[in-house]
Image 1 (cartoon, rainbow, N blue to C red):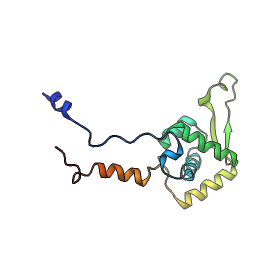
Image 2: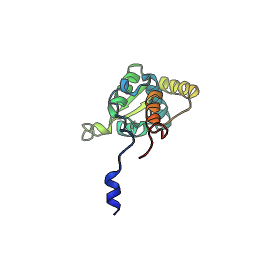
Image 3: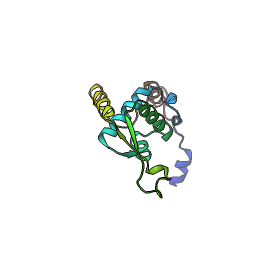
Image 4: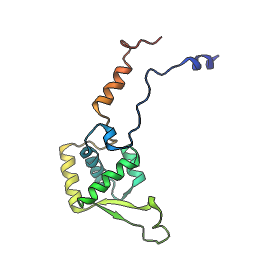
Length: 139
């Protein structure tokens, strides 16, 4: 009996696509970079997997942000001490340099938010409008 109703259910809107690049987020890359700085200040020596989970974006976006921060000498890489573990990509850990800590402090003072990468206002508005019952009544 319950399965008959389940088969008739149709989502109001299609879920948004998961961005695979910073450009797909619809927010400036500096927002992502500042969030990476703040996360590394709050949780030192994170690996890529942990940062990806905390920021709730694909690892490619986090890797690009880390690469930019490394070019500025704000992030340093810690390799595992053991030769056996050094070949494992997930054991590479990232931490802030002194300059990175200073930049993280500046970023935190400008915006104390530390959490997942936010969605763009346009993407948010598209979902809200798609779920508006006045425009799309449930039948």
